[in-house]
Structures are given as structure tokens and as C-alpha cells.
Image: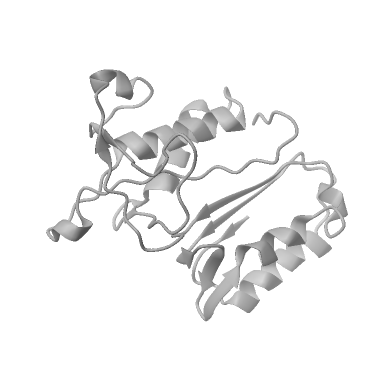
Length: 194
């Protein structure tokens, strides 16, 4: 399921309610939802304003969507969590940093890159290619999606975003900035895609 930023709050809610209350997921082994829009901490925007992310994800609780009980529910959210920028920091590990993917920069995000993005940070996108996160997610899924477990996939996505992307702008306030995605997992078993 995909919900972009061109939905109103009501439209997005209606689509999600249809998925959770009217569709039967008995033959599905998991559910994935991709949300791409503008946002701020805990909120994602529709065409008519912000709505809490929790109001969408809570529709998939076991008491709300019985045909998905015990099945992984994945939400990939591409949205800012604020307006702060991560200036990055030079790494001293040289080329070894680039073991998993081809690197274009020798710096990594400052924002606790081994934990998670700090709340309040900006999420970057290329006007022609799209968001750094979605580019990396698609690349890693295409290459490793049928081999690796989902947490290994997402770790490689984090690595690719952290090391292969850096903002560029003629305005130095917006140039040479970094990003690290945030992975939050409540999975209770490993998940592989066939």
C-alpha cells in the first residue's frame, strides 16, 4: 500500500480504514505501507494539514485488524521530523567505510548514527531522483531483498543513506548536510521476503 502527500487527511484515513476494516489479509504473510510526504515529529502532512502518525498505525492493532494479527506490519515513512540539519563529521576509517556500498563521501551523520536520527531533523530528497531514504531502500531491496532478513536490509539502507548521500546547495546553510534513517522495530520474529 502506498500513500503519498497528495492525499487529504480524510482521504488517507479513509484508505487506511478500508485496508484495515474491509480487506481480508488472511492469505497475506505481512503488510507493508509506504508513506511519503512532508512531516514533523510524530506527524505527517496531507494536503490540508498534519495528522498524527500514531492515528494511522493504530488502525493496524490486533483488535482493529484481525486478519493481520501475529503478522508483521511494516511502515516505511519518508518525512521530516523537524527542520534541524545534520552537518556530518569526517570519518577516519577511509575506504573501509565503503565496504557495503559505493561511497561518494567520507563523512557520516553526527546525529547518533549508530542509534537513530534525533527527533527534529530534516529528511533530504533529490528533486530528480527522490528521497535519499527511498532511493536507498529500493536499491537494497533490489539487490538483497530475497537474501537478507528485514533488519539486515534496513541496516544496509541506513549505511547507504549515511555514507552515499550529502546535500549540495549554492547556499552554504544547506550544503554538505547528512541524514540517518531511524529504524524502530517491534518485530518478534525474523522476516524474509520470497
